[in-house]
Length: 142
Image (cartoon, rainbow, N blue to C red; front, top):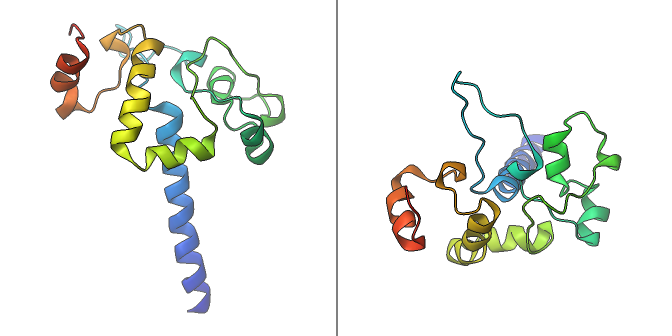
C-alpha cells in the first residue's frame, strides 16, 4: 500500500503534465483533411515551437516540437528550431502556468493562433461548441 500511495500520485501528476504539454504544443492548430479522407503530412506549422534556453536545457529540446512533427525519427538532441513555425511567447514553464488560467491563456494565444494560420478558419481546431462565437468575436469568415 505504501508503494501505491507513491505510484498513484506520481502517475496522476505525470498524466497531468503530459496532457498539459500536448495542449500547449498543439493549441488550436489543425491539419487539413484531404479529399481521400487522410490528413495532410505533419509539418512544422502544425505545432507550437519555443526556443528558450532554459527550456532547451531542462527539457532536452522538447519545445522544438515543430521539428519533431516534421521529422519524427530525428533524435531529440538534434531537433532544430524553425523560425517559420508558430512560436510560443515564453518557455514551457511560463506557458504551462498561463495555460492553467484559461482567460489569460486565450487572451495571450488566440491572437497568435490567428496570426499563425493567417486567420484561415479551416486550419483552426475549434472547440465545436465555441466555433460560431469565436468566429464572431474575431471577425472570422466561416
